[in-house]
Each structure stands twice: as structure tokens, then as C-alpha cells.
Length: 118
Image (cartoon, rainbow, N blue to C red):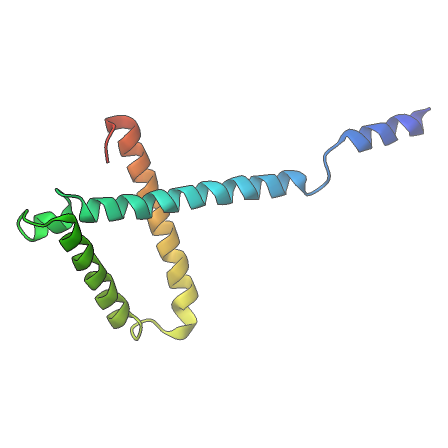
């Protein structure tokens, strides 16, 4: 009778890696959501009518001009940065950008939650 009771208890328990896999899935999903919020919020703040690029050029920039200026800036950054980062460090630099945008997304989420706006 005792052996049968322990078998039923083991069959009711979760498989050994299920909790860890679920935690990794939830953590990865939260990280992805924060990165998307960080990138999207940064793009919005960059090209909004009262955004960073508009303030940079004096407030007379429409959406199309802001998008064009942002694309030129990103292209110039990519062009100049490609030779500045050693091949062996590129993976670590990419990881760094992911966490920077996740932290930015967390800041934007807090601003939206407490102030109601980005």
C-alpha cells in the first residue's frame, strides 16, 4: 500500500524541469516586452512632432523629415561603429544594447504608469 501511495504522489508532481522552463519563458517574454517598449518609445520620442529631433532643429520638422533624419543618423552610426568594435566583442556589445533598451522600456513603462504619457 505504501509503494502505491508514493507512485501516485510522484505522478501528481510536475516534471523536474517544468518550473525552470516556465520561469525562463516568463523571464524571456518580459525581457522581450521591455525591449520592444524601449525601442518603440525611443523611436516615438525621436520622431514625434515635439520630439528630440524636432527640438534639435528648432521645432520645424514634420514626420517625414524626422524619419529621414533619424534613418540618416542610424546609418551614419552603423557605418562609423562597424570598425570600432572588435569582432570578438560584437556579441557582448549586442547583449549590452538589449539590456539598455530593456531598462529604457522599464523607464517608459513607469512613466506611462505614473504620469499617463511617455
